[in-house]
Length: 309
Image 1: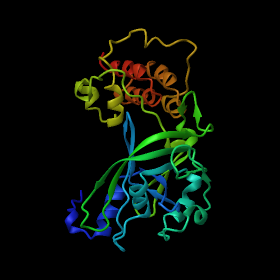
Image 2: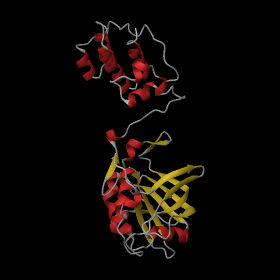
Image 3: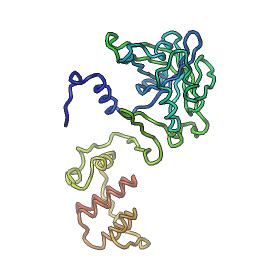
Image 4: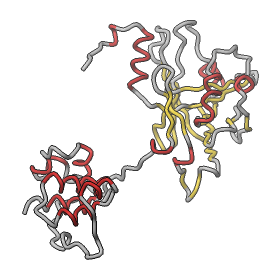
């Protein structure tokens, strides 16, 4: 394990080390206008949500470590108290990368990047039409950070006054993350995509789980179970009682071999074969692991309880 003191690094190295480890980060595509009406749109990966009543989001526009100048986004929000924030999808990444260039204040990055302005309803700055999710925001609080040092962020807490959500990603009164196709920022020039197999659900326990420390020792210390699998088993309200009917397999179940059935994703057929003889701890645990993979925690427990006869 490498141990690094921030003070031992140059600013750029420290900056990239922070951004590479604190990742992936959502990207805010922030649109502002100055007091003369000039439009600016710029991406920020120092961005997140911090409250829902009222809805508060924050961005951290840095002071340039090269020029020592404030970002136009920061200047404009402090002048007008308004902005819009649009999320970034995978198809927008090249355009938002172009919009991140340090153009002069009177240059409209919408025109440079090819993004499209969509009129807002409450605030003056437009939203980004290509984004499926935008927020119209007003300034709640400005928090300066180490003003005497260049390259440091300034925290802008913004109150969301209006949400805009595309019909294409909104169903059953909620956003479907599988339809958003969001992009996020990593370190250096790296991004990632929240799409396809990269998305997965983890159901939060409906009660306080028993915890890994309360698992029977033979399960907790198993050489075959991972930490994630132990956590699934430990999410139950209490250790289940052995169900003796569970090992009575229906005559309609059959199988070729434990290995074949496990490879085919059929834990019940694998269990049927295992119970024809005295099953090993390893094979029972492999079957339980497959039940866990299918999120059938109850069946996984019953298989593991067969180890203790």
